[in-house]
Amino acid sequence: MTMVGTRYLVRPGRAGDADDLAALQAATQLQPVTGGEPDPAIEAWVRDLMDGHPSVTPDDFLVVEDTATGRPAASLVGLRQDWYLGGARLPVGQVELVATAPGHRGNRLTEMLFAALHDRYRAGGVTLQMIEGIPYFYRRLGYDYALADDGAPSVPAASLPADGDDGSGAGLTVRAATVDDADALAAIDRRLTGDQVLSCPRDAGVWRYEIAGRRAADIARNAVAVLVDGAEVVGYLVHSVQLYGAGELVLFAAACDRPADWTRAAPAMLAHLGVAGRQHTVAGQSFNLLRQRLNPQHPLVRLGPPGVPKRQRGWYLRTTDPVELLAHLTPVLRARWAGAGLRWPASSMTIDTYGRAARLEFTDGELTAVTAGVRSPNPAVDPGTHAAIPPGALLQLALGYRTLPEVLAAWPDCVPRDRRTEQFLTAAFPPVEARLWPRA
Image 1 (cartoon, rainbow, N blue to C red):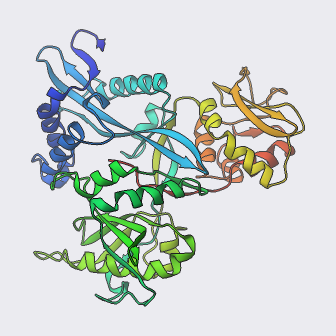
Image 2: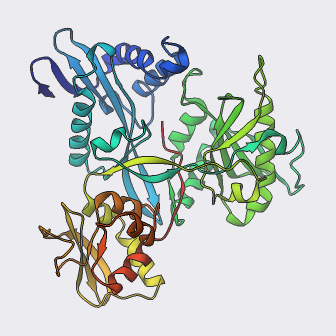
Image 3: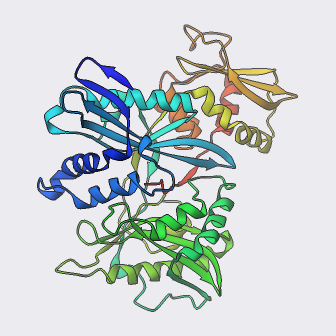
């Protein structure tokens, strides 16, 4: 617990907060959509997170309590999860449901909550924090746009296969998932963690929850479908359970266990999405568009029909410690340099992030460890520093959101010492496809 002045107390959530937090969040989130009325879908989501979620407990909420009333004045929740890149695990805290009651706004309660959250994650070794949110706002709290959120074109409903026609005759079909499919879905996710993509795998318990564990009204509830080859589950789709906007069905995730099967899988998946969208035609709202929250390089996008181009949105990210982030990526960096035939000629490389310095240690030219180094007061010109990289730029590089040439063009204070360092950093940080469906 942390006292802030005499009026506010920042503390972890408790099971007994469920009613108050559900009411607070329902009365503050999505108000332009509800016309000022409490949102029952938000309320259901909060109650699901407080009771029964496989990876969230009441303690994962942070609450600013008004000491005069004992009631919550503001709150947020952090959903811990692991992302994977090339087999390397990245501990992540996804921040959701940031809200302040109207009568308490203007008291910097959001800053109090994020300071407490960052302290918690620093102590718990949660390397990355991620949030979707108000444009620019979270930059003031140390976050940078460092990961692409969607960007795939939206496909007109008329471009999808007609009902019952998958266009392939290739033996793959799609059906609604059941809890009995959870082990197979978890196995697919485990295999994907070794790919050179950024992924957020779910275990069998989380898959059972996604399929059948949420309240019907929960705004985070989605439909899960499985791709089957005979009796074998070989892929999945995750899409919205209703239409949004002007008749949009939203696709959040698509996976295929055997990459060679994508040419057979795509027609069956697209046919299923067409059927799912048309089933939602109700009360004057008809299915008009498939909105794909996927990377433009996703196999389903490349094999699907052309659509309406869309600008990529960004997710805000922050790292508690750039050195720790690079340490998690040690095996990935080692493999990339080996694959490029590069061997570092010295025993160490120093990357300074204008606040923290990372010492990359090498044996016979191969990376063996990343530890904290001695930072320089002026790393951009220090001859002992091989590269000076602002933390926001390092996030973009580490997650494959931007390549080194792109970062150098946009960040004048990103400074490699020489051409050899630039060559190594270019090979270390190639573009990476994000196939992320973060937990909620």
